[in-house]
Each structure stands twice: as C-alpha cells, then as structure tokens.
Amino acid sequence: MIAPQLPSKIAENQLALEAAIMELSNWVEAHDSADIAHNVRGALDTVDKNEDSSS
Image (tube, rainbow, N blue to C red; front, side, top):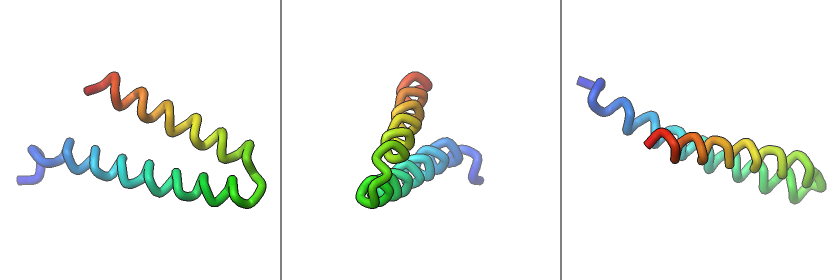
C-alpha cells in the first residue's frame, strides 16, 4: 500500500524539485540575469518557510 509512504515521497520530490530549480537559478545568474535568479531564490525561500511551518 502506497498511502503511508505518500507524504514521504511528496517531501522527497519537493526537495528534488527545489534542488533542480536552484541549479537552473544558478545557470540563469551566470548568464547575466541576476534579477530573475534572485526572484527564483525568493520563491524557493517561500517554499522552505511553508515547509518549515507545516512540519
């Protein structure tokens, strides 16, 4: 049964997506789009804060 594992899998997926988005943000910044990279990191900070407040 997958139901008991679902919250754990969702959390793992969220962390993987955050890491991938951060890598893209780093690439964007390296290609002279620091404002966009800053906005992406701000959004990721919000995700982190929401994750912390829900646990």
